[in-house]
Image 1 (cartoon, chains in turn brown, red):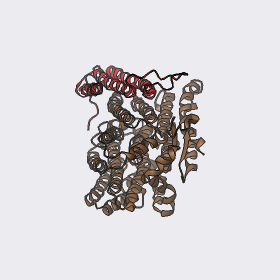
Image 2: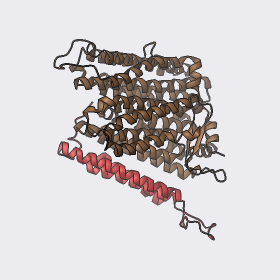
Image 3: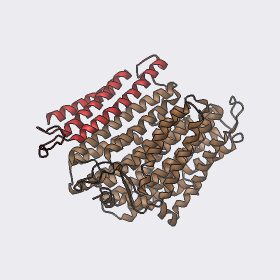
Image 4: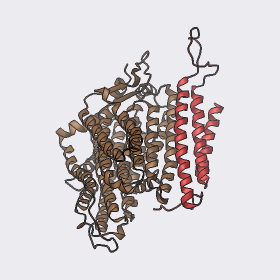
Length: 509
Length: 112
């Protein structure tokens, strides 16, 4: 089974190189091959579920010498198996959506090449068990996303991409500094080995400094307030399938995933760091929600809403971490982390869906301004319907998936004694409902605005992706059922909470 | 210790450049300075006073070698840095063509 692990990186990377070569002769090649490979990766990912034990693949077959791991290992456990399924599902739907959406752009081969590179980078970040290798894949995903944000090469796109690159570049450098310092203190790069070595030394000032550097670096990548300035520009300027991927999975795969993996499985949990995560989460949740209210641009509003929803995930994880750091009830910690991961999946699905509906509206009318649109529901029934489902899911209305994940987060906060956090989470949920209802009224209902002209429903491939995601918004509610939860989400929660297994098996000693 | 401190000062110089400069090319230069201070830091980590070139040949197995791993890391990081800088400068040139200026204050289409 572990022989399949390198395929996650090899297939998209190889396709990225093949597309410009064959695409020169056959222009339709890129858009046919990319959904196929992502579907293939999705199937490989799904047959790994449920993950009962870790799979380790040593690249090049370099076995440990004297108990010291050399070479790079790829690790698959419950947590990253979940991420891989989400990444490749969203990549499949986004590339399918791009089939008709990208018609108006030139240089389509470059688009698909960059898309494949970005997915290869994300899969690599999620799979790797080596710190420097993680940095390399992080940069592959980042550089591809910088180029994809600037893909329209108009004034706004270029400005957004420059902003994103300067902040993203600084984040990468901080991460590299942290990795350098970690190598300096432990003399190893294997994450499991680092974890073993750090377990023996406590209360080290330099370790805290490294953790702060990592929180800043990955916080910039995940756009947590106060590091969020680039996100609304970058995510609203990219082509819509890319916005769906950036907001849906990129900020989670190269931001939150790595942060959680390192803080839970590599470093020993400390109360101060846990509290930092919790506070950053609360700040992003509230400020992201408040900033989203005033936005007139559909995609920009969605981008601010991403900041707010990432805040929810951070809050839930922060609660789990603080409970674990103070040796509290592990049941509460497990509930909080379950809520975080549940919300992570849900957010990928409904934010991807909403960005796709935004793209569909833009495709039909060429306008994204809420004040200039209106009454599109009759002309675009599928777009309007799926967008409504997505809005209800993200605002946390029963019986949609968003309701259950937010409910679990709030329950965990109450059980852990953070009453203020629970109240804030509920309030922000109401704010979310308010700005999504305003969006619905502004675009799909109300008076049919003048000057839009003849509006036609989006092409079939776009509708297919949107419908699948809208159905998933409903279907994911099933994850609340204990039997299904135990198969899909609990291995992920266990792999985060169990700090010993990761370090023991991966080092191959 | 003093070399590490100077390395850190170089990092902060680059950071100051990024934060204070208005010209986008100078911002790119600031980022490069930060980047190169880190390459220097990585190379310094592997350096051992009096260490030999890490090539094992019969007869020198017991000699003290410098650590070769950070050197490999620096080479990789330099290649990545090249890609980042090329990308940044490409966007900077395209920005100049669209806005006819390098001043970051005048490039402000996106707000809110």
